[in-house]
Length: 519
Image (cartoon, rainbow, N blue to C red; front, top):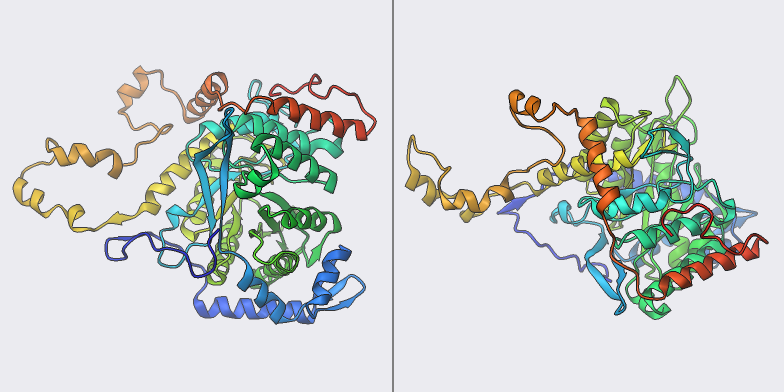
């Protein structure tokens, strides 16, 4: 784990400058940050967890019932003690429990002079009530097997870096939905996983599953392949359950992601600046609680700040304000050297159509340019209510294109190619030269889905529309992709955890025979 001040600049500013997008100036960042400190000290937050209130009280905060007013020093100390970087590993593979280093990601806040392309990581979101069935295309309730399919597709897509479930399982006891989800995902991908939990029992079960895969608790702590996800509520409220879940994880050295929303005009002020204050107050007060529990705890804070649609009173997941507000919070977190989770790759559309493509392209590009550390909710439709595997495939292409933009232009002496220009001279061409062949795939982005052929070639090949190419690639992945195997015996232990969880609820012993297509 890298401590403060240890971020390494891996690129020379003279040779390579990553394109970046900033919403806030340094002066504006300071103004929003200090306004947030004033809000936390004057207005405070509701903290519904007794242990968290005690931690804050012991640090000098004023507690009045569940309302806690937090002095600036507590927040500043928390920011100073929080690591600006931590690692999430690929899950262990095979009987040797070999860690999959290909998919290790650094969850870091990029320094201003660091290439953001090396720091921005994309993944799906959680808890969609509905799912677009990959076989029929129908909108149906999410069910067992869907998180496993989402994990499998993410495992196959090069530009999805971590996995969330994309579904809220409806056909199992609701208290166990997060545990089933994690079990399906850990079987179906080697990429890092970000699970969530209703209860502390869920967290303990998820931890047991992860230990079964890692081999022992020390190995999991040393090389964690999951970070626990929790949420605060806008405006200015921390729930008892989410804090209990994350405090348990923090105590065991596990990384956590703590994220909340705020809908401008509804659960946040109508102004962008006011929405940033409410979101940042939730993020920083949560961070303070976790750092007071365990100084140096690996935490990624985050937010999904949207504007309320004035016609429907629904949060506008596809609107430009969400990308703008997320970029502003990314600016602030970069200034504070904190990892930040934002949102992109989501749409208000009800199917994978032109609207979905436009909204996702804008979001992904702006998230990449803003340097957000973890970007989640890839694959959402209909205001985060529908999960879509086709949306994962579409966004994989958009993310790939965005990453080419983030690489920028290398202007090193070698890349300027003055000797080759001199050799070719006026009116020549570069097509036949070895340097062109050697560099062409690195320099020129090649799409997987988008068509660049002439009309005649496209027509002769069947004239497929983009939606058809997306469906065909998804079908190919579902029919052919095989994730790396779990260590021997791990699946039996996972089944044991699920059966014990069901037994606590007085349900059937055999959980794995009732509909999961993955386990």
